[in-house]
Every structure is written in structure tokens, then in C-alpha cells.
Amino acid sequence: MTHTVPTAFAAADLGATSGRVILGVLRDGALELRQTARFMTPTVTTTGDAGEELHWDFEVLVRNVQQGLESALASGAEVASMGIDTWGVDYGRVAGDGRLLEDPYNYRDARTVGVPEKVFGQIPAATLYGRCGLQVMPFNTIFQLVAAAGRPGWDRTDQVLLLPDLIGHWFTGVGVAEVTMASTTGLLDVANRRWSAETVVEVSNLYGLPLRRVLPDLVEPGTVGAPALKLSRPVPVVSVGGHDTASAVVTVPTTTDNFAYVSSGTWSLVGLELDAPVLTEESRRLNFTNELGVDGTVRYLKNVMGLWVLSESVRQWERTMPPVAIADRVEAAGRQPALACVLDMNDERLLPPGDMPGRLAEMARETGQPVPTTPDEFTRCIFDSLALTYSVAIRDACRMAGREVEVVHIVGGGSQNALLCQLTAEATGLTVVAGPTEGTAMGNLLVQARAMGALSGGLAELRAVARASSELRTYSPGALGISRQQWADAERRAFSK
Image (cartoon, rainbow, N blue to C red; front, side, top):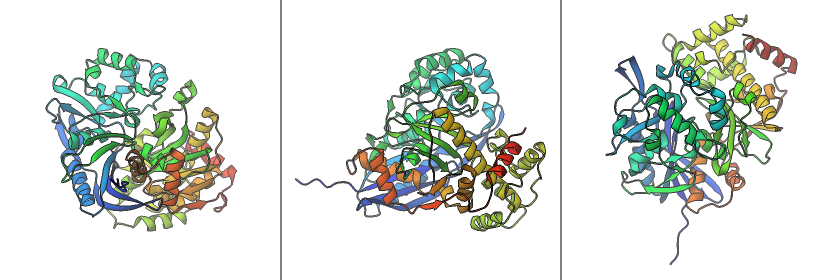
């Protein structure tokens, strides 16, 4: 009997702004991608004891994913499996009968304000970092769980599932914890790729949380799981790099080990791929994170606010001005003076929704710089500031990891922004290679293809397929004539507060 090698796979690739379902067909050593669904990631605002609460509309989310997967199944391709990736940290509580106790909280909800300080008053920040290696962000899962400790329903909670695994559970009825996602919780022993018994016990005892009972078994990317029963034709759900950056880094089309990457979208994840975490005090102080990657790797990186700052600014402008195409915004920003105003894109004021231009103007005044007034000036400020923040993050990561890099790879939607890519080359003084654009979905698909036997080898082999599947563009430093001294002066201004 002849067995046909599977060639088609479906990826649900969900970002915090928009989601998509991508059908990937493997042909002649390359992946051909076709989008079968695209939708805005749905949020819902409810009223709770503490006021307004921001949640993800899980029912709408999974129905959108389901429709996209059904379109993939109806395409005529013999879909062999599906995989799910999302942003990190967010979770849902699942009861013993499989029901969701409430819609998952959106990480931008304000309930975690002040919680990190509360936790560090009882478990020292250095102690936690030595175990989990995680950058302190107010929405890390550990802080979300502590904020939720007093909510009803913990006695009925059977599992706490991170978002890609929660969606997988909806399709299959089986709950697991994929390790790249688990590494965003603050509850993982990052050096050993397992739950930290010490942290789980301490958090459980201090805050009355049943974590020892509700945290599911960990699985590595590439684990073939149960079939999706809520589709017209059940297909296995493969645990991919469930954290979208873990999937994106799989597709970095590098030909050298000496590379840095920027996974550029709503967030920008800027860093290195390592074999082991960096758990030094300097790394903690500079707020670098050690998140797990595919094939035993560590993503040593910094979270930067990313193109969220621009999209939220655009939302503000469009309340009083006609819409402008993003390509036209980029072109107009390119005509503005370089480095007129540069700001720290790690400032926590840029995290919540709201009047982003107003916050940027406030930051400019605080640092004694000219305040942008027009959308074009604000847009150029955002791009210059992102490139500068990328450069500082890469330099710091290399120093602390003892690495040198010779190229920066930008993957994801931001790789299409030619001005931002060129500015990144200028700021770092390094060659920038942009693409693939659909890096996250492609990484998801490549891990599935290997798990199902259609591909073999390690990351080098998967990246060779990514290169063959992508249109790449190279940017060299020097094209804009911005001197190293100008960048050094800009850095002092941006971080002078």
C-alpha cells in the first residue's frame, strides 16, 4: 500500500489586532500560502466589580477561526493538520465540563496595575527572574493570575489554558500547555523547560490559587495532538510554536548563526536566538526576557511597543481627519527631517489604548525635544524611535549574551515598511534582511509539516524552505546619510529622562 506524503496544512495565526487562517501547500521545496480568512481580533468591554473590564470575545474568535479552517478544508487541498499561534500571556479558565468560566481577559485590561510590586514584595524580583528569566511586564500571566485570585470559580476550574491551547481545547476537548507559550507566564523553569515547582507552590500558597491542580501538562512544539472534532473533517491539532514570535523566528531566513531578529507587528520582539537563557542581574535590570523557542532554543529578547503606537495614533487622527493609506503615511514620513524627535518606545505609557499622539507629545516635552504637531511628524517620530530602540536592544542583548551579529532579520508585517527597515539598518549599522511577511504563519506551517512527516531536519532545514518560499529585500546602512554621531545624540535625547 502506498502512503501519500502530506502536503497541505492550515495555520490559525492570531495577533492582538487581527487574525488570519492561512492554508499552506508544500510544493517543490517551498510553501505556497493562501489566506482563507482574515478578521479583526474581537474584544468586548464588560462591567465588573472594579469597573470596566476588557476581554477577548472568545466565541466570536473561535467561530472566525473555524470558518477559516472550513474554507481551507473546502479548498480541494488534502489538509493534513492544523496549528494555532497567538500572542502571549492571556489565558482562560476551563471547568470540568469543558465550559469556559468567562471570556479571557485582554492583557491591556487595567486589573494588573500595581500587581507586580505586590508580588515582588513577597517573592523578590531577582528570585523570580533567576527561575523564569521573564521580562517584567504588568500583564505577565503570573500577575494576571494574582489579580484574579479573588474571583469566584476557582473551585470549579479544571484547567488554566493559554490562548492557543484554549482554542485547541475548544476544537478537541483536550488541554495541554505548549512550552513557548508557557514561557510567557512567569511560572516556568526556563532553564529546564518545565513548570517551576518553587514558583507554583509559592504563588499558590500566597494567593490561594490552585495552580498545582490546574496547570496542564507541558508539550514541545511539533507534538501531534488530538483531532479537531468541530470541523467537517477532523484533522489533528499540532502544537506548534504557540507563541507567535516562536513561530516567526522559525522562518528567519538566516544563513549564519550570528543574527539578530525583529518580529515586527503590533509588538516588536527584538533579540537573539540562544541555546541557554541569560539570567544575570544586568539582564534582569535591563528587563530582557528569556522565552522558549522551537527545537530547544531560547528567544532572548526585549518587547518593544511596536506598530501598535502608530495604529493607535491613526485611530486618534481618524476621529477628526479623513483616512490615509499606510503607504502614503510612510512616504510622507520619509520626507520629514531625520531624528527631529526620538522617544523611548519601551515607555509603559504607550501600552494602553487612548490618545497616543498626546502621550508622545508629553514624552517629547519631558525630554526637551521639539514636539511633533502633524501626523507626518508623529509618524516619522515613531519610525525613528522604533529603529533607535531596536538598535539599543540588539546592542544590549549582544553584550549580555557574549554574541556578535552581522545581520538583522525583520520578519512579519513590519518587514513591508521600507522606511522602518532602512532606518533599522542606519541605526544598527548592520545589513537588514526583510521578510518573510507572513513569517508567523509560515513558521506554524513548517513545524506542522515536519511533525506530519512532510519535512525533516532541524531549524536550518526549515529555514531553507522559508527562504525558498519568500521574497526578501536587503537594506544596507548609509543610504539616508545619518551619521553615527547623530544616532548617538538621538539616543541621549530619547533616554534622557
